[in-house]
Image 1 (tube, rainbow, N blue to C red):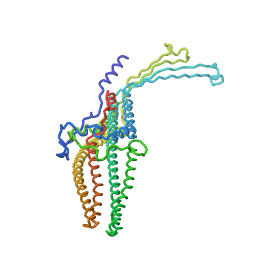
Image 2: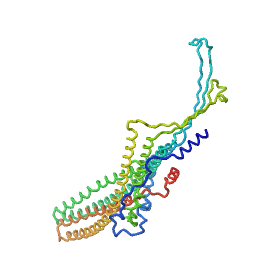
Image 3: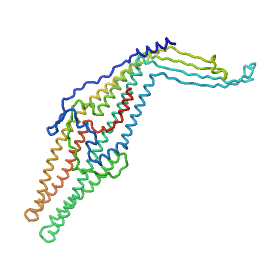
Image 4: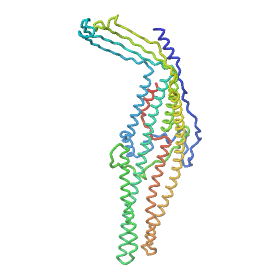
Length: 481
C-alpha cells in the first residue's frame, strides 16, 4: 500500500499539462490618439479622463441619485451579477475533479425462503443481511485535462466579471445620455412655450393695427401662421419628453413614470479637463477588451483540454467496508473487506476521428477568440478617435450657433422696430422670427450634442464602471488561489 501511494504521488507531481500556455498576442498600438486637439489640456500621460469615477464626471446630484438607483435595481446589472456567481461555482465544480471522489453506501437485504419452493428439503430461512462500505474513485490528471478545464473555467469567471463591469459602464453612460437628452427636450419645450407667448403678444398687436386700419390682413395671417407653427411644436416635444422619461424609468428597473430633474442643460458641466492618457493603458481599462482577452484565455485552455483526451486516462478505484449475512456480526473483524485496484489505464484507439476533430474545433474557437480580441482593440481606438473629434467639432458648432442666435435676436428686434415704424413690410419680421426660433432649438441640440460627445469619450476611454468599493476584488483574490 505504501509503495502504491508513493507511485500515485509521483505521477501527480510529475504530470504535465498538454496544450499551449497562454501568452498575450501582440497588437500594433498607435503612439497617440487621432483627434486630439490643442484645446485639450496637457497633463501627465498616465492620467486619463477614463480613470475618473462616474460621480466625479457627472456632478448633477439628481443624475447621481438616478445612477445609484439604476445600479441597484436595473435588471441587466442583476443578471450580470448572477452570471458571475454561476461562473464562480463552475470553477469550484471543475476544480473538484482534481481530488478523489468518496461515497458511502449501505444496503439491507431481508430474505425469507419458501417451504414449497424448488428446494423444499431446505427448511424455511429468514434472515437480514447487511452491507456497509465506502468506495473511492480518483482520476489522476497526469496529462492536465482537468487542470486545463479548471484554467478555462477560471478565465470564464474573470470574463463574467468583466462583462458585469461592461454592463455597468453601458448602464451609467446610457443613463447619463438619456438624462442629458431629457434636459435638452425640456429646454426646447421652454423655448417653444416662450416663443408661443411672444407670438401671441405679436398677434394681438398686429390684430390691433388691422382693426384700426393701419395695416392689411396679410400681417395678421402671417402672425397666425407663425403662432400655429410654434404651438404645434409643443405637443410633439411633450410626447418626446414622456417617452424619454419612460426610457429612463426602464433603465432604473422601474415601470414608466416621471423623472426628477436637477440642473438645467445650460448648468451641466461635462468639460474634458483631463487628456485621454496613454494608448497602451486603454487595453487594461476597457472592460470589453478585458472580456475578450479572458475569453481568449479560456479558449486557449480548452485546446489543451481537448488534446489531453488523446492521451491515456489513468484512474484509481477502491472499496472497503463490512458485509455479513447476520446484522449482529456486521461490524466484526471477519466481516470486513477491502479492495484497491491499481491504476487503470484507458487509451483511446479508434474513435472515428472524434477526438482529433475536437482538437481542431477547439483551435478554431481559439482563433475566433483571438480575432475577436484584436477587433475589440481596433474598435476601441476608433471609438476614442471618433469621440475626440466629436468633442472638438461639436464645441466649435455650439460656439458658432450661439453667435448665430445672438445675431438673429438683434435682427428680429430691429425687424419689429422697422415694421412698427412703417419702414419695412411684415415679411421681414416673419422671416427673422422664424429663423430665430429654429436657431434657438438648434443651439439647444448643439449644446446637447457637445455633452453627449463628452459622455461618449468617457465611455470609449473605459470609464463608467469604477466605484469606490470594487465588489470583485475579494472574489478575484479567492478564486485565483
